[in-house]
Length: 227
Ligand code: CA
Picture 1 (cartoon, protein in one colour):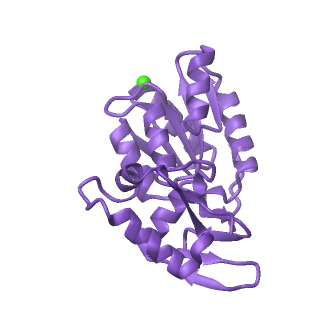
Picture 2: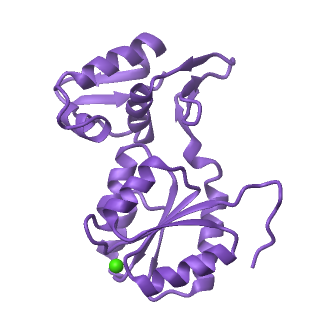
């Protein structure tokens, strides 16, 4: 058991695991260790919680009903959720580990694993990713996800709408990726939205933050700019 620090809120952990016995045991262990744990039993529930609540760390099983762990992580990362994630996998094959890491996992453990090792890995993850989920860098500026504001080193602040923030967060979280319009529409907005919705919000963001904040890659789509 760790000593709770009265000045710091308990770290919030999302556990996505469909094995009832294992997940019950992990909830008990992690709660004892001082985490505030939300449990999801399938990928759909995990996606909903991951998108609507703020966590300090996510532990997810690879093999899940509804949406598997790798796809779940890919969707969370696509929507700009940058929370450090540890993937539990029954398979230790190199290809499976690479797939998990490519989808955006920071670490993984192969089942069956030692509980003490899980706790140590989670401590290490949280040390490497302090406040990781709350801020995204955009060149010399940063997006504060709590306040929905873009701040620059001189103290200037621009407030964004919810949809502007979601689009900018998605682009900025994967700064090397070029997103096509259809991908952005389904990741950030809704596939049922009009095809022009992405261009409209790119226009809004450029008007607020300067033309260079988002690059147009001709014939391919959009990428976060370096300015
Ligand atoms: Ca499973």
